[in-house]
Image (cartoon, rainbow, N blue to C red; front, side, top):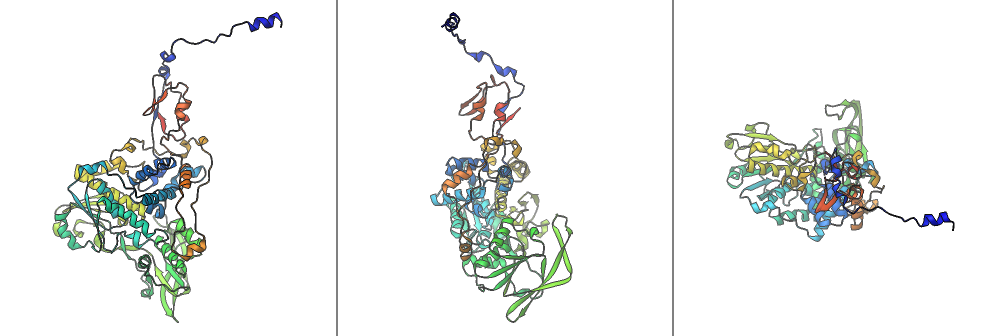
Length: 588
């Protein structure tokens, strides 16, 4: 070893170390902006008519907190097992994950939670407002999704509710208009039973008539009208009496009393969801249905998924044909159809069609079903156009009217609120549920704070910038603290996510689907529900990923009950905000 090497080795290695804390150097004095925890609104929640807190629901499901996830659904929607089957999930169209790979299967997860709640007999904990039990009683006309929803939320708010149903069993369109392959009987029964267990009373075979109003003021403090569409529209063509009513057919199918010729060709006139339900039911009964629609296939008001499902089941759609007349010929029905052609667009942006000259075609079938639309069973089921048109006029002394996004409230001899399909801009089960919720909240505001407070207080409960309302926000829950800003995909830090295929639940083979009214899609297994919910970005909410604390160079993020920022040391570098995957932080 040389002298130089020995000298180097003998140099002491001294590491400087402070003997006092560096906390005296408060780097927060350098700060020009301050980060903050700022939970925002997921686009799926804003798109959901019921305003469900979807980001939180998926987060809880992924943590195996299924009971809590179900309760979060039930805070906004009392029929999760139903909606998980029949809702056409506008939430998934808005899902930010769809711009990354595929949208989260929100409706499958809702169905999983709804079915789990039925099998485990979950019961919704009573609202804190139940302790303020109201002495007011509300009458509800119709036990469809709107009436059931109104009763559920009013009961949660402490009111007594009586539901009056004209049919022998409750459910409205859920029971009479949706085939069993989409909504099994047991699922509907269990969802309704949960509400009756809460105290909602349902009186079947008891239609609300004009005579009812004469005594309503003595027994009830308000009336919710959710009667829905009960009368099918007529085509107005010669021989129409030979056609069968599509709505009545679906009702008979649910009761197991439908009689249809097996193996014959059947024409179904219409292009809406009811028409699709009719053709898909007919094919399961051995018939060969043909759907006749006067516009183009892409103009059909039926939801696109229903159309695709019908095509996969072999159902033929003949477009740009309108019925002219029906005649009997040799035991068959000859349907004469007018050829139509596109001719620009109407004021609503929908394709307008006109007759294509005198060109017609004929179709020989064994039966014809109509499903071209429906109307109220009685004129007074809908909000009156003027005060004098509403029965009974002898009670009408003064009147006020408030048109809301899903309901119309009229104050006459007692508050009357009209909802459901008769006032909804979109005719869907989830929109009907939203209507019942809005009605319940509006009535509660009216009784507590007066007519003039309704619009302002409802606006405080809006989810994002749309029409959806949150019951949790109305009860001043934690959700009310969120920023209404809707998180966009560009605000998601997608570097923290890996592509993952959307999980499809088990499916019956096509042959088995057509052989019975069994559900084509099955419910998620628990492992699939956990995995699929893990695909959710949880847009706008904190899911405890801890990036903010891990990346903070000043170690100024700490946890004490929840995450907090020590502003004495936060120098405003904004790394925590940049590294938050879900945009649950912001700057001010």
